[in-house]
Length: 80
Image 1 (cartoon, helix red, strand yellow):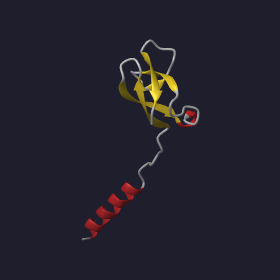
Image 2 (cartoon, rainbow, N blue to C red):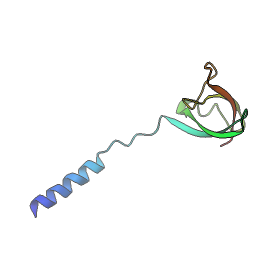
Image 3 (tube, rainbow, N blue to C red):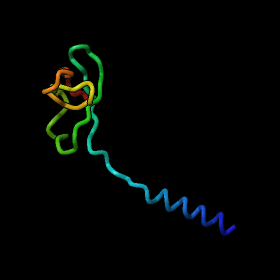
Image 4 (cartoon, rainbow, N blue to C red):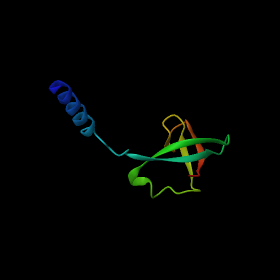
């Protein structure tokens, strides 16, 4: 019985000590204008106040980040 209680106590302590980090980015929905598809873009927390709904941005479709320097980018409209 003592072993069972010890195992339960250890299990609860492991669950309560898990790292609860906040994601370093916010995810916003965009519509890619060139092919009218919906995608999601990751915007760092520090820049999320700069990019607003109805802004037109260049989105890297491989990394799903705002990027205007790569060849894999398409123009998109932030919708949500």
